[in-house]
Amino acid sequence: MLPEIGKKAPAFSALDENGNTIGLDTFSGKKLVLYFYPKDDTPGCTAEACSLRDNYQDLLDKGYAVLGVSPDDSKKHTKFIAKYSLPFSLLADTEQTVCNAYGVWVEKSMYGRKYMGVARTTFVIDENGILTEIIEKVDTKNHASQIK
Image (cartoon, rainbow, N blue to C red; front, top):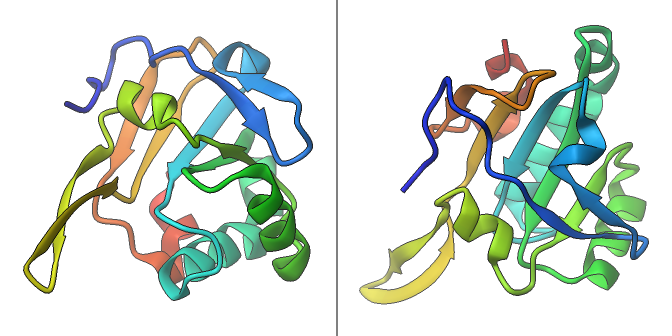
């Protein structure tokens, strides 16, 4: 189940692409765009990351930090960041603890096969750790423009 807008965002802690522990408290006093995506270097996930990259300065100007989360490991994240010159960190949620805390680790279905995976979702969190927006219908090519 997704957390509720207007409530405290779930606390989290995971390793980024450099092996540093990053948590919600890392962004205390800052607005945060926390986006969950299924897999590094796939067409939709690449389009989404590049939309955020191409509009990164605009997001910074609005006071946002950006952080991506997927079940991929740090090594894959490092390659993905280098390949697309991503200016923000990606968390390696290999045990899906952050995904579960935000309710985005869900049963999916493709070609009649059911499996567990990430529901592409973005959470906007204010300076006080309060959830202000949830974007469930992510337009991967124009994702940055969906963030108010």
